[in-house]
Every structure is written in C-alpha cells, then in structure tokens.
Length: 97
Image (cartoon, rainbow, N blue to C red; front, top):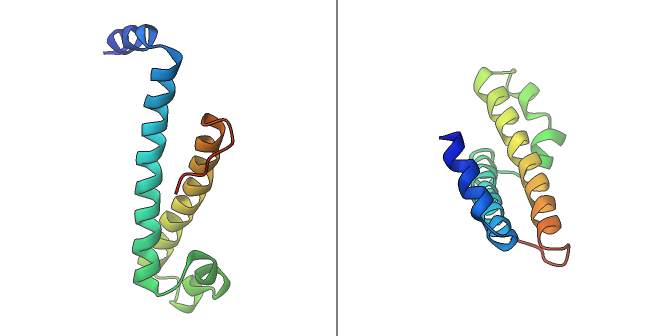
C-alpha cells in the first residue's frame, strides 16, 4: 500500500498535491465544526463560556462531562490549526468558513 501511495504522490504535480491536501483539511474542518456545534447545542453555550463557567466542576466532574470537555477542546484546537493550514496553503489571502 505504501509503495502505491508513494507512486501516486510522485506522479502528482504541485497543484494536484495542494488540492488533495486542501480537500483533506476541509474535511477535517467540517468534522471539527460539527463537533463544536454538537457540544454547543448539548450544553447551550459556546466552548469559551463552558470553560469560563467551569461546567466540568459544576457538574461534579462527571466522566461524560469531562470527556465532552476534552473532545470539544480538541475540536476547537483543530479548527484553529486547520484554518491556519488552509490559509498557509492558499497563500494567506483566503479564509475558509
């Protein structure tokens, strides 16, 4: 499998590689945003408010709430990272939302 992928990548020009990478970033961004929206609806607030209001402690450090907080934080970090990568990939002149 690895040999096949290496061969395919070697045969791609720069524009094709950039497009493949861009599509992967857009897919990741969509997944991270869906996670953000899911938890925002579940808790009735955005992540900043969730953290500021210390919801994990207020809910007795329940496993589900702590797990949600970790997954939500990863999604927020992912959004920031992927948006930065998309901006770098496009030459810094576009914002993908």
